[in-house]
Amino acid sequence: MDHFNYKNNVLHAENISIETIAKQVGTPFYCYSTATLVRHYTVFAEAFSSVKATICFAVKANSNIAVLKTLASQGAGADCVSEGEIRRAIAAGVSPSKIVFSGIGKTKDEMRYALEHKIFQFNVESEPELLALNEVAASLSVKAPIAIRINPDVDGKTHHKITTGKKENKFGIDWENARAIYAKAAKLPAIEIKAISTHIGSQLLDLEPFRQAFKRVEELLQALRSDGHEINRLDLGGGLGIPYDGEETPSPKLYADMTIKATQHLGCELIFEPGRLIAGNAGILVAKVIYLKKTDHRDFLIVDSAMNDLIRPSFYEAYHEILPVKQAAHDAPMAPLDIVGPVCETGDIFAKQRLMPPVGEGELVAFRSSGAYGAVMASTYNSRLLVPEVMVNGDQFAVIRRRPTYEEMLGLDSVPDWL
Image (cartoon, rainbow, N blue to C red):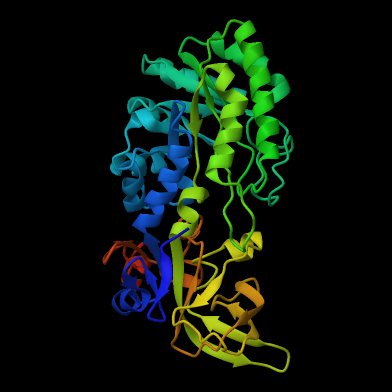
């Protein structure tokens, strides 16, 4: 459920007309619903209310500080993969005691920043990283709280670019080698073993891969405890999918029931890192039609948004429902259109032969389910201005990241003296 609905034949975000926002902000722009963010977080958190669980929103899904602050106000922590994301989380009011630092390429400077701010946990993904973290922590005379992220060699059955739990993926340590790595970690003076971590991918639509991964985590936990390690928490990652095109997706309640059944006898605190599940359907991208280009082979709806604003269709072949902001009549004729952007790439395409009602030049369209991996992956390719972001709360809205000016964009470049 989200809060983007037609009212009086015009698409609204909560109680604000998308047309009203477009007139003030211009297009393209991202629009987020506070009510949807809060609802999705609450549904997930309440599903785990019977156990001790920390919900750390995956900042990589949507890193806008207003979004993070909205979720922090509901009790969310943050799963971060860079110093920049940690800084954003702290700026949004997330307590460092609820920040998990993931990612395979943490630098020593990033480690130092995280240690100085006393974050909750480092998810260590390789032996070299473990040694580097020990070195940095020792230089600060502190101990780094860690989980070792294990790669359980479980296929999440998702898109090949977002699966993370197979042996050939770059993430984590092979589960067969985990005991040896934990033994090495226990001997390092500035390392404090706290947990086991795993994450097998994003946009998973089936609970069985989770069940398989959690079984391997249980086996490893029992082995590590027999080796003398005191481990009382499990970081089980995120990855639960959302419906982009009417897919059947497991509810947070079903996911929680399965997870609790698989782990409740282990006596462990649980950590979760949902991102897309919370933010995906809490946002839309709004664009304006520039031209309807007709050819002998097909017709193109050219909009003012492009792959630099929303790269998922180009990069992942991802589906996004596309709606006219003015609701079409129920008997409006439907015609196949290629919906494309202005970027000079054949791959700048949002949909091929998508059945659409009549949409004219100057009219608005909305790309649903764009709240995750949308604005965070935007760029200025083709020297296009970075897309702005708007947040709605009931009958009010605010620009939470403005559109830069061309002068600001050009001002980031500098010309050497010899030119």
